[in-house]
Length: 318
Ligand SMILES: *Cc1c(COP(=O)(O)O)cnc(C)c1O
Image (tube, rainbow, N blue to C red):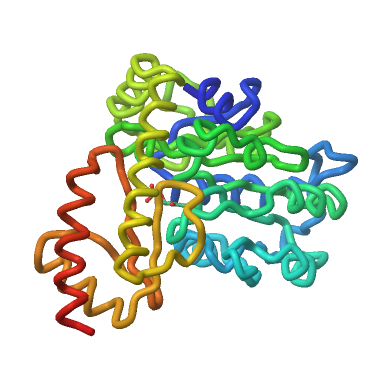
């Protein structure tokens, strides 16, 4: 499982473990980083953060809310770097926020709200130069981007860990996330487990269910990378149909869809969303936009029905 997920991120020689999802993976990655991992000439070594120092993590403004939990749990400051006009993190903004107490940087491959991918290669350069741990949160994009032929987001130079959730776009049952590391740094999380047959444990949860992990592995074996490629290509085709349909209704996309997530600008987005929800269409509103995720069950017919209803609602509101 770890090997296969590592493969998705561009490196099958990884270390890692299954988690309950993206939140836990992010927590664990940040714990590894905080436990004194810094880089010297690209290799991970003992960190520069003293025991008493709290440190900070530089994340994009678009980072998932799990980083608020991390701030609380680890007692560290989260610094949010601004985004550029395409809603990717602004690399200059990241550089400005990084200081001697920064022990981790985060890039996102498939942002939760817009499905955008940060310039991971550029973040990798900063991470290597400054000797900072770099984590890529690909909870959503990890099962999308490789099947669109993108190789610029996973274990590129400078990246130390990647989080990918089979339970998002991997066709697997909840809960199943996977966290993979470029080097074997998991020992930094190990605690002794005297009463168990295993001597130590590095996962966050203790006793846990293995069913969904086995299930996720079985799905991966069953579909194969070709199976996922077909599914993802179809999701992207549906996403573009939806985009064109929205444009015909005068709703412009906030960014060109990168993953199967579409956000379109819409006046009174919140009201339109509420009316859609009343009619059993589950979408969300982000800022002044309607956000739609074209999961694999969304068919061409569904898009047509949705657009008809959306047209009707827009007529009433405008
Ligand atoms: C969904 C998501 C998470 C959180 O994952 P959970 O499985 O809900 O814990 C973290 N990061 C990103 C980018 C996500 O899309």
